[in-house]
Length: 382
Image: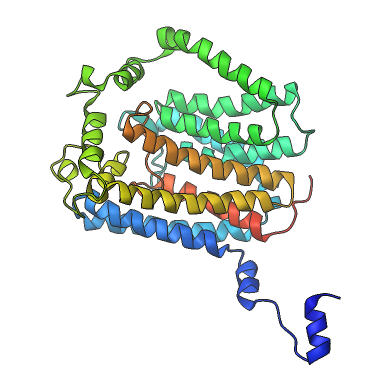
């Protein structure tokens, strides 16, 4: 006899299960994650308004994209994880086909040929969707095999990760290629790969790095690496963005200069102030406290994602939820490190704060998958 049965029999009263909790589960929505996302989006719009120098059209467009993302997140959450597991190989095939199509009819933007502009459809970036499709496929592949994965499974996993990453590198979009590759690598790590293999892989990458730099790296990639070690070697060229970003961050101090009072962004010293380097705008206007507040919002979403991963009822859901959460963390970390000069500039926006389109919608698809995993039952094996 549970406590509710005892109370009902002894007093004649029955304490029903929380109706609110039942309703949220019926509509397959996780309230804590939803609140964290909405607050993060609202703060992002607040920062973007200042970073864009009060461009209302840009902010309204961003708000509409976020609203569309929330709707898309809700739609995705209505489908069980089993649905996505069943369609993972097909989605991967479609993703590869779109990446190949980009090579022939893609539209170039900021030096990267990564956009598709098809008749009757808004322009979109197929490579962004692979951040979801690749971990979907990897979770589908590894969840149905013995864990920790054997060498042959690791080999095929590497092939499935490297093919889309290589196609994106050909598009001259190194940042997105790294994100796609890491989204798949996180699944492999969560599957229980032996640390000996991990360290061996890292050592092999370090050994291969000089050869890549000498024979395969393009001039702009070499320039970014050299600029990372010494931005002042070209202060008005390749090192300009990071130098101005560091000036903005340093001048903000602890409390910042006040909303809309950032000289670096409003005087156009930071060229990408509403995209890749928007964190510098936040740091200049709100100081260290503003940056810590943003980090706390990200941490709230991340902790909820890790909880959903921990509470997942099957291996496929656990691998997928863990990869989505870790990819989001990696996204945030790399942008903040890039703006601070801790890693080379690779052109990644700050999630839900920087201006964006396909990248934002992809994030919401990932959040929808987390909600689907948390509110549906156990995934049936294929």
